[in-house]
Length: 93
Image: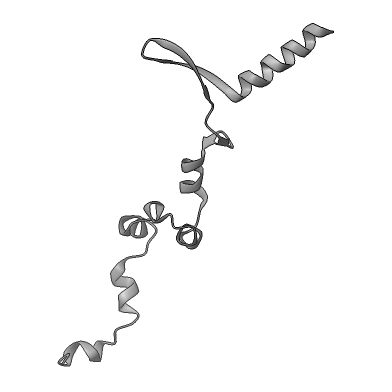
């Protein structure tokens, strides 16, 4: 009976920690947290929308203008909706 408790403790310990080599010596470090088999940063990049990223101040993960072009949106398309053709011919000042 005592042996099974030891095995359970060892299994639990192995699930939380992993062994790595640092400077030629074995060290036990905590395993990285995973969501659906992906690390947290990759999961956020794949699943978060721009509003959530902005609310959580994760601007480094915001899609760039190149990503908007790949999705069929361009800065010119967005700006074209705001400008009339008549305004282009007028002097701006």
